[in-house]
Length: 348
Image (cartoon, rainbow, N blue to C red):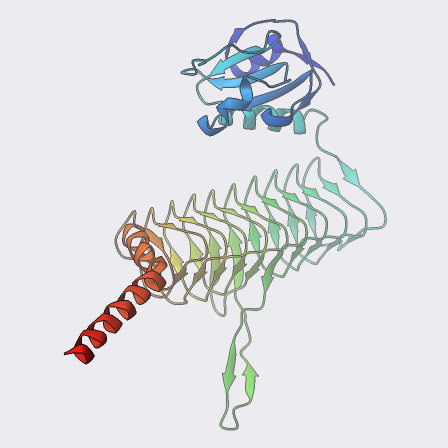
């Protein structure tokens, strides 16, 4: 499918500088772009690539001023935020053919399940007793929607998603392949013989509106009550959310992070990849946690920036790391000083 630079500029309400009729048929990264492709420049550290790019059109921020000559055939579209505008374009392109509709065969639909309008249910999916599927929902092949589970309107379950009984998924949610929602929390009680007896998990998981769950992530149902993922939360691939966790609005969590049971994450928190967070603690609003950090106690000050294991103030961590990195050198200097002192003492 082809678009002209003028059509894209109008869609984004951007300012076009160059050929308004150049045709585009794909997207590309600025460093390895090909002709008739659209790219973008949002980060100044990639600016050098724009002076040699083969892309026909590049989205740039309004404040972009070239430091040298641009390629002769390059057209710019200036917008307030190039990265945000790219997201708009990608979303538009992804949905241009419209969502799939209809119920494929074979599918199991329990007679008590409620199915909304313009729904797509892919082959080999299972919709259990009392389940509710909202309007315009997409349930791709090999999904499982458990008993009395509710899927809100415009939500998408990609292939292989498993949602256990009594869970609730809000409107406009997206759950990627292999994710498991509502599996048992890790609850075991040791007896006098140190044998671990399973504690039944009778709660559920609630995903509020506009939540996105990455591929192969797992969210455990509560022991009692609900594990709650609030509005606008974005969770990457391979993330583990334990039972009775609550995650505040617009929090983002990168891949391979694990949250232990009953942790409370407030809104607008950013959590890097491979972070581990202890159970039964609180992470205050606006906290940022660097990748591979381990959080062992509550973070009570809002907008904290943490790093390390156990995690503490990022600025202090970086100062400490400089010292740690120089320990071998310091050790050698100390040993040399001791040797000099010993030699002087022997000479006397």
